[in-house]
Length: 403
Image (cartoon, rainbow, N blue to C red; front, side, top):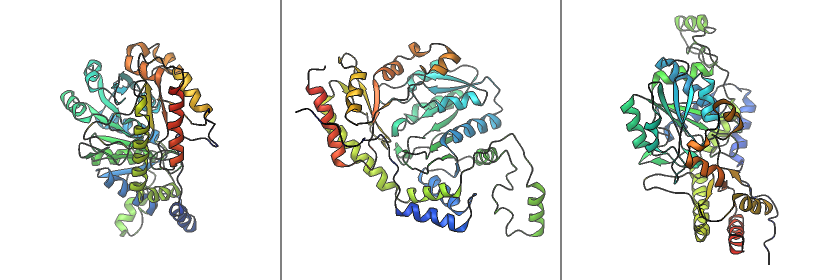
């Protein structure tokens, strides 16, 4: 008997709002304090501690965090327009867009066929006299292979930005993701690991970078006055210093601030991050076991020793020579109410073809992933019966004469 369509869509992500989130947001609404306040401070302190960093700054998106990270490194390092930043050939387009928007040139590097993260073996081939940084992306919830990347960065004097928008709370060889490079960036957009609606975080262990990041996010303002609390409880001399510099701007900046309501949501989510993470990992483990019989046709997520995986989503790539067509499998899943998404194609995007020409053929692994990769959900709100249905759908597809 043919498998019937599931009663509702089994989505790739979720918004998980509990009574705790509602309570904290109501605290904010009752105080009338919407700008940077106590929830922001608490969220930033918690987030920094959980990711092994001294400084964290909440902004209005992960993309904004990335744009600030590149801008701060460019300013402090005195980079010139046209200097180069290495980026993986598979990632969300914001990763490389922020490089272009800062007047720099993204240079793409092919990715690992197992983890889909930037391949350390390919990095040195792309380094030139104008290379200034490596933008490392921890994709789909799994940290990239940081040891060889950092070794290359030290050898060539390059900065490292960790684009960790899809990965939180896990370790790379006992070190928290986001604590290894110069600046790390996270997203708290809807359906991410921590959800504040919109939002992002930039983290660093460098005090100077933190100072410039905060200024840039606040129109380039003098760091003496970034919060309405900065003129409280001061002596006369201190108050005069603040008053005289409130509207002093040191650099061209942005308005990338978030609200206290988003910070309140973030605090509530961080207070139960272990529950969120463990549920995602358990769901992914169940999918791994259930889909293992089909490894002749599909490649399941790789999980190297000593590297954690947060499973923001569950990537699947059709193997070469399997005879399976991605379009057929994806449409079979979609028609049975299992949502899928492409695995972040980048170098074949129409806008990049206009800017850079036809690049895809230079990146064979990325091309294979673009043509054969997609992901499904493994989020914490997925029910056991939904996971069972996904496994049944794969079983039905591969059990019939479609291969």
